[in-house]
Every structure is written in structure tokens, then in C-alpha cells.
Image (cartoon, rainbow, N blue to C red; front, side, top):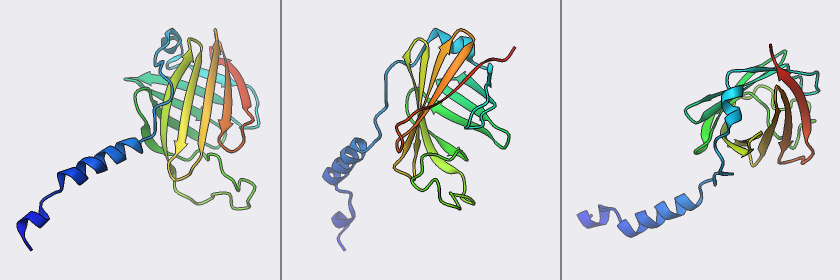
Length: 171
């Protein structure tokens, strides 16, 4: 085999890089800051009784990463979302699932691979996009802030109806 046959093909490499860049998930939204962020970072919201069984919710903004923590009777979930790109990680939070009524319903599976992004829609509305990497589905979590109160909408890519939970900052 001649040495030149083993040399990299710069034209193919450039075309492959271009193609791979075009396959990247676009970053949703543009507004990455709000004056509300400093007021709610590190605070815990007590959530009213709801069918999602969320008891508390907290947000922690650190270096353009927002950590969303959801606590229920049975789980403490902490998911990272980036303002600048997709923050990858894992979670045990079950996402949108076509066979949600199935008997085994994803039991026994390892944590799900996810990518998260956050965006301020306006001064008082924070939107999280959570993509389940090994699934075609996405979940949007939108937080609406009104002084010490919060309303959180959960919307999946399967069922466009919103489920809303409400609460207030713990004193």
C-alpha cells in the first residue's frame, strides 16, 4: 500500500465536519439573563399538592448553568441546563413515553441520557428544554414568576396539553 493512500483526504474531512455541524441541535431562544435570576437562585419553592407529586422545586444559577431540583416523596432530581449550549447529563426523571400505560413502564432501566438548555422568554418567564438523547422526545418546563409565587408548566412532545403546578418561596 502506498503511503499516499493512507493520508487523510482533506476534502472529505472538511465535508464531514460541515455535515456534522449541520446535524447539531439548534440552541432555542436567545435571552439568557433576567434580574429575577438573582432573586430566585438558591431559593426553595414549596409546591401545592399536585398529581406530579412534586413537593419542592429549587433553582441554582452558577456560571451560565441552571440546576433545576425537583423533590418528591420518592425522588430528588437535579438536572443541569445551560444558557449557552446543550448541557449533557443523566436523570432518573421519566420523560415523554409512548407506552406510558404499559405495565413495566421503563422500570429497571439505567438513568436516561439528557441534554438541557434554558432561556428567559421574558423578564419573568424561564423556559427549560430537556431532550432525551436516546429518544425522539422532548419536555419543556416553563416557570412563571410573580413576586414570591411560581407556576410551572410541564409540556411533552407527545401530549401538547400542559400540566401546571404552583407554589411559593419557602420562608
